[in-house]
Image (cartoon, rainbow over all chains, first blue to last red; front, side):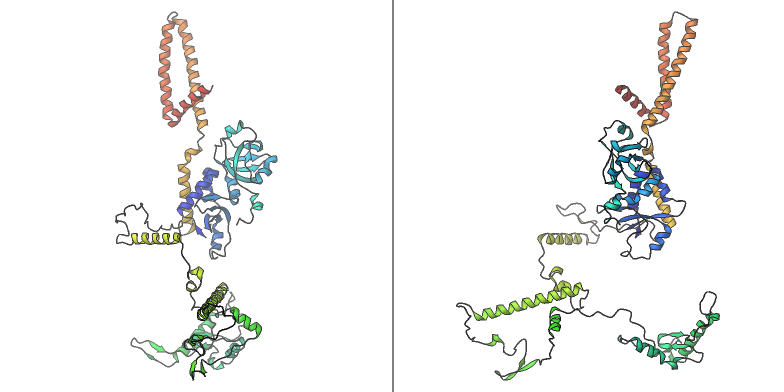
Length: 180
Length: 377
């Protein structure tokens, strides 16, 4: 477990910025307790100060995970957000999509969001911007990337892809053994 | 303290030892073990002697320290050149446990397991044996051993011998085969021992096992990369660390690059507040750099357009009102007046343009937007 280097932190921030925009500052400077990012076995965790202080004396090999796992750094050196980041993103999301109840399950099996399943969408969402995906009861289901902008979405046919799937809560069941 | 080899001590022996050291208890009732520089108070502690934190009183500790000092200064010794009193400590009384665990036993070899199962016991044999034929003492095994088949010049023919086969070569080959088989068994034993976590110090895996290098043929690729890395290393092993060396003909730029420096984590070894500050600064910078991303350009253009349209409309209305007033006054010169009006309009348009230009980039884009929109319509 160690703090991120400057390059890593920049990578993480840039990715988070796509989803939360200016709210990124709220993630770093919190009013309740200092929160930090830590890297452990190529995974990035977000946690409060008291937690990583407690974890500091635990040997690297013995430590499985701590805090909220928000993503991982790949072999290629890129940063990927994982489902763990969903709570965080949902709280501060800039762009959101709400799914119709009929297409919730589709998405939870790892499929892209189609126009037919789109219930609501935030105004002025540009194409290829990061979105957090909710159901109509405002429960965060996952996140992804917009395939079209809000305006384009209005004229699309029902089978067209609106948002590309990146992560969803179904992963907790589907890929339980590969998560840590 | 005399350094002695580790001794295995049972718990009973240890407690016996502890009980039989009455002579080490001094006049004040403290147990002193000078060899270990240790003093303790063996008397039971009564609760009213404990301080509010539940710790034994400081007097007890002070007394123990005093007892140790007294015992130390009562030892025979002599002063050195600097006036320091030098004493030789007696052997320690308390047996202190060994720091490292006892070495584990070597796992049994395959033969040892087999022998145990069959009840085969090792028998000591003399190294030298009396050789009747030669009439002298000879080694049992090895060079010049008793009954070495190779010393025999003539061999008896056996019914199994085939014509054209040299029994001596056959014997040599059989010997080589036996040696090879034994080597295989040895490697297998070492491997299994290594798997169990036991490798004797005398064994170097790289010299014994094929996968660690023994007789392991390198493939061409490995050779190449090894030669290349050696050449790169040699390239930077000059006085200037390769900085001012001429590149060789055909050498690519940066081939003999320096080893990559490891990046340090943010604020490593510093308090969390500094780390948080650094992260906050980075986040700030990122947000500032991307602040334009948040602009809804389409909407902004719409606003500008609307403002312009309104201005134009107001003008029109004003002109209309003026025109009505004029018509009422002068009458006939409407055509000329109209021209003048247009001129005036152009001038005013320029004025509006200026105002928009102050708003910056948006103005130019706004115009483009208008044109596109008109085209679409």
